[in-house]
Every structure is written in C-alpha cells, then in structure tokens.
Length: 394
Ligand SMILES: [Zn+2]
Image 1 (cartoon, rainbow, N blue to C red):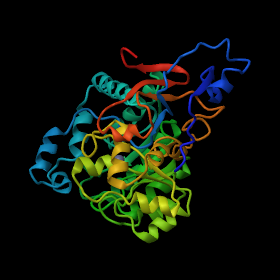
Image 2 (cartoon, rainbow, N blue to C red):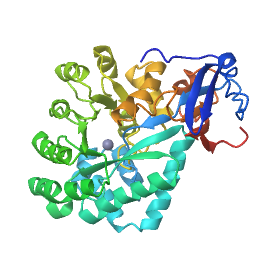
Image 3 (cartoon, rainbow, N blue to C red):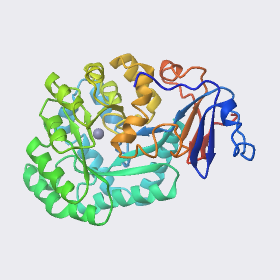
C-alpha cells in the first residue's frame, strides 16, 4: 500500500471500455493499436483508477440538518436517536417519499460522486425496514445501476434499526428478517451483500450472526458495521463468517486488530463519520496497517452521521487524522475497496484487462489530492472508457 506504482509521463490505451495497455507514453504510443486510437492529452495531470466507495447509505429522501444543529448544541447521536430522531426519522421520511422525487435526488447525488472521481459504489438499503420500502429501495438501486454509468453494488441492511412497529422486540424483528425479508431479497436477486448494524444500542452479536447466516444461506455475502460506538465482538463475528468487510472499527482492540490482519476481511474505515460527529477517536488505521490488515476507506454517505460523498475529502481525513500516507489512502480508496466488493479482477487499479475506469485530477503530484483539503481537483471521470464527468473548460 506504500507504493502507488507511479508511472511518470504515462499513457493508457483503451479499447471497448477496457485497458489494453498502460505504461510509459513512449512505449504505449509505439504499440500497433495506438495510431488508430483517439488521443486525449491530459497535460501531465494525475490519473488514478476510478475511486471505489465501498460503504454508502445512498437512498434517503431528506437531510438531517436540524439534528446536526442539535448535536452542535450538545445532544449526542444516541440521545437524538432515543427521542425518535436518528435513523428512524429517515425511515419515516423514506416511507412517505414519492418514488420519482427520491430517484431524482439519488441521481443528483450519483452525479456528485462521479464529479469527485468515484466510478463504483456500494449502496445499502436500511431506511425502509418493512417489506415494501426495503424492496423498493433495492429495486431503485438496481434501476439506477442499469440507467446511469456508475456501477452500484447492492447490500441489504434490513438490520439497520428496529422499526417502530417492532419497538422493544428486536428478536421478533430479526425473526421477520430471517423468515420473510432475506428470502424475498435474495430470491429476487436484489442484493449481493447482507449487512448488520451491530453495536451498542443497535443489534447484538447474536442477532447479527442470525441475520448474516440467514443471508449467507441464500448467497448474500456478509459485511458488518463493527465496533463503532463500543467494542462488541463484531469484528470476531466478521472473521468467523468470512465477511467481505468489517466497517467503522473506532473501538477495535489490539487482539481484534491481530485477528483481522490475519484474515481476508477488509477493514473499512469511515473517518468522515468521526469528523462530522466531532468524535476525536478515529479508527486506529496506523495499527491496522502496521499489523498487515487490508484497509479500505469509504465515505459512509448518509444523512445522519456522514453527509460526505467526496472520497478525496475522506483521503484528506485519513492522512491528517489517522496518519495514513497519501499512497496508502489512494490504495484504500481503489484496489482494497474493490477487493471488499469482490470486483478486484475488474476495477481498483490501472491494469491491462480491467475496466477503463479513471479519475483525472488537476494536480502535479498525487500527494496534492489529500493535501488540498476540501477542494475538488477531479476534472474528468471515465467509466469503461466513456467520459461521465468533465469540468467545464478542461
Ligand atoms: Zn454505515
């Protein structure tokens, strides 16, 4: 992760949306296919693989700016949730939302993702929490995956919160997920992954195990929200179930770090969440990296804890707040999340045979991408060889 594999004065040759050559410009331009290709001179800018955002809650119908103000005034996230705010307020809004208005809103967000260099993202359900709204969310994500250029990988997150109709009966809600919703989601091919918000005040490790094992029996690969607010043992569960990813990890302990590093589970860190909530304790990225864990970064784009859709911004936070190097932050936003989405053969690096998913940054040095905090230097984004975003004047 420390070596970004930099090619100076490089070129990429693309055919039918795939990379067929990459390397020094002098070598690539001499290849037999090169003279017939349309040439695009990027003027010495930095070209990265299209960024891969492996943790988002993409589909929601309203911001929670009022709650943001309450938190600034001193209420904690858990206090707000207990008073009916938090995830459940987004659930109420989503259940009432008009489908077309919701789709327009999500499409606008997707355009913002591509404007910041993202070409593939994971998106979770989990603001419906009943059969109708959960299935509608996943169907919308399927539709969007087909209709616009970004690839969207779907995760069923029915176990995000206990809905009002199951208030105080979390186990009964888990029974409902296992018996009713998971089979419907899986048999209709609506998701690839299954996730659980396993934490203090959310679902227990035992409940998460039931949900993820039921999903796995139907072919849904487990992912897990783990050790965000408290150390619960969720990381151990992710390892036990061979999950694709364990996400958050702010409260992970040293023994868990060693176990995670010895496993194939990707450690997905979400520093945007700590930043937005004003929580000083970021996940121990340095310890995870030094132990040898596969670390990924993601935005956790959601209306409550991380309304951030810029992976370059997340890279800045990773560097300054978690002491990741710029090269590590780039690997953690490209190849490692690709691995956690089981798409490492197609995306996440600029290599022959992979999709020509590329993000162009108007900087002279790749380290300037996290360095210039809060400024979007992405000027052009390609998905499978097609320009899907270009800043005017570039
Ligand atoms: Zn999340």
